[in-house]
Image 1 (cartoon, rainbow, N blue to C red):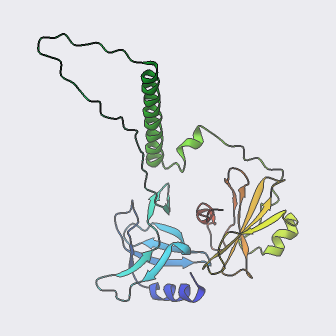
Image 2 (image 1 turned 180 degrees about the horizontal axis):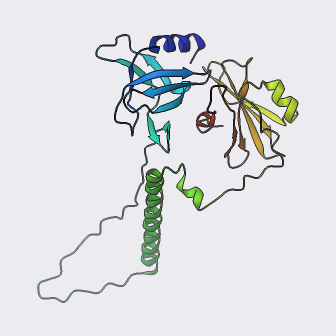
Length: 261
């Protein structure tokens, strides 16, 4: 979102009640007020329950031109409430393998039913189908448990990746740390990558330190004003650090929703 558009959006919402479209899943009352904002997030308050959340500006769309019957703030993607925060909603689709319908033949009246033995290939196929059904059922149960229990990834409990690093010099970097401050502390990265297009509303840059096994992520409204966003593990892409914001909270929600790179 461009800076002028962002300022116009906040001005339109100031001291007014509004509703999100689409409504945030998991919250019954869809009426909100604007509480606070930073360069990367806005804080909203539910008018009925008093719940407050930080929402990245990249998720916000446009404000309706009329407030009859209610002012509408559009969302670029559907959000849901879970684990005490607001996150992008992901539909869970589990495909179960299907078996071809066998053709049944009727035996002549009075004739005893014929016993058909399975060939080696048929037996292997049945075993594979049984294994696929078992794996599909297990994955479905793990995903269901994750949704109910608020786990971001239920499989993490079974396969814990190695997220060790050679140092943690990135700790203590704040959201106002510039590119030169980051490089001054961590030294020049072994490589750099822009993970957003030049015309994108928000710019993201990755500073690679493979020998230390982590990647530093920078973000800004333009490529000339990049600031520290956080650090992720090089291989597992686990979030290792999120920048603290001056008005409270941190950038963890944005770190979990980085563009693919």
